[in-house]
Image (cartoon, rainbow, N blue to C red; front, side, top):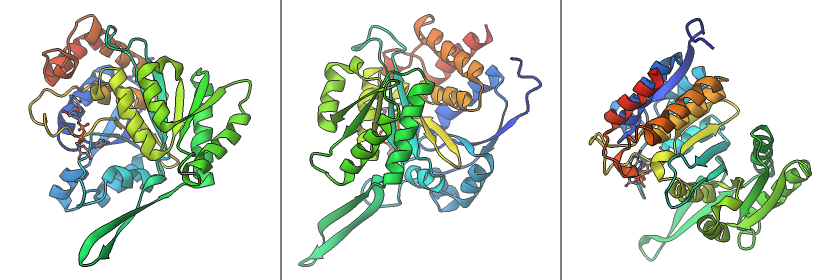
Length: 345
Ligand code: NAI
């Protein structure tokens, strides 16, 4: 399909922190070469939002996403321990982005694991990430006891479960594995397990369903990841398992994520702001580029999403241009230039 006469699509662009601006610039260049006609509204958040507006999630950024309902986002830094609450979590709450979709697929063969092709679907709004935490002071120690409350609702569990089975049907997947810890957290993750099993019944004969306790699942992912197809799990477990799954396909530089909700969709890499390599020009932009490909699929430009994925594949495997995290020597800019040559051929 020619793009010349297509209308432009308003979208919010958040360069983010650390390596964010470097990989966002690379991704936007690739999208431009593809002819993806986004009309970007560039906004800040995270540390950049703090510096510019004194707010890690400035109102102007929220207003922009409310308008466009579509965003491409670089990673946002969150202080560990004290400091402001994660802007990522707040964005997911503000726009009810209840489904976090993280596909992991082997692109470079010959690594520790070959032919990985699985998708992790993480509930994105509930569980232990709701931020209901407090300390109880005892004997003059203000932090003598720390408490956190997790919240799962039947409606929230049903929504992500339905999303997971629907996703499996639409994407030609065969099996959904429910991951939980209902042997210990009987209420919090028991509700998730029971509700998801209920939903699974509606798909009997079409989508196979099994279940794993999260710790066993973590081990099975290392021993035999090929047994998994779609995994659906709660917020915290999904966060942890998705980094493990990234390790199966070459690391954090290779895994994209989509936050899908009722009111918007935000696309990002699974990795964080990588402060250890920020500003060095060596970050791998592939995860964010794959997130941009998911964004193209989302707006029904699967043709362009497919071309971007093919271009990345050829740059990595035919031209063998790779960044340091993949054992190569290319800088972010060199990788991007090689990809653009591919996209132009
Ligand atoms: P991280 O994902 O930023 O980095 C972990 C390791 O992976 C580092 O050694 C880093 O150099 C490497 N790495 C990550 N992405 C890479 C890439 N594209 N190319 C090459 N190497 C890459 O995790 P970390 O250090 O735990 O978190 C740093 C900050 O990012 C924290 O403030 C955290 O809260 C935030 N974060 C933000 C996320 C988001 O915005 N969605 C997700 C995860 C973390």
